[in-house]
Amino acid sequence: MNNASDLQLVVVELQTYYCRLQVGTLIKGLEPHRRVVQELGIDSMSSDESDIKSGNPVGDVKSKIWRNQNVTHTFRDMDSIHLSLQTTTAGWMKRGNVPCIHRETAAQCISTKGPVGGFSHTCYDTTWLASLSITERQELEVRKESVDLSFSDDVTEVIFN
Image (cartoon, rainbow, N blue to C red; front, side):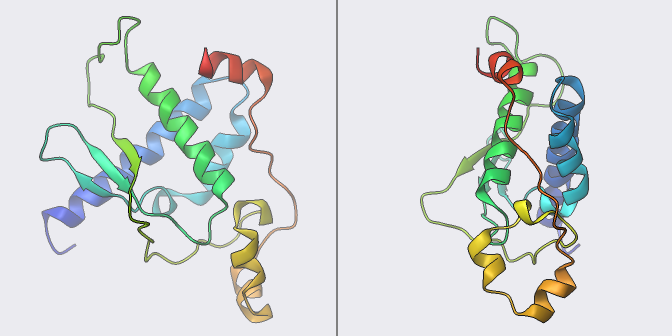
């Protein structure tokens, strides 16, 4: 770690990871989603450039070209669920740390972090995966089983209503 900015990014990654684990644990039906968060690990959670100076933590999302967009969308939904768990019915924030809001940037920012290996093929972008050599795919240790990251009707009703 070179400076406070590097430490700040690590803190955001840890907070993002544990918030998503919490959502996957608290909401019945999100166990598969929690397992994906656990498997992807802290290093795969966030490469956000954070702006904490304003008092409201906001992360500009850096996209991971290797990660399937369905995984990214699932993580954003889990972030929304976490945010809703941190607010009262009147819309006020509960006590504790303010959750970090992730926002897509106007200019596409690409993460410089390499891919995390050992996941289901459904966690990787299909175009990116197809562009790899046989050796690269073997090193990545892509698993053949599929992971369903869709939300059941019961979960969707809890989340979006």
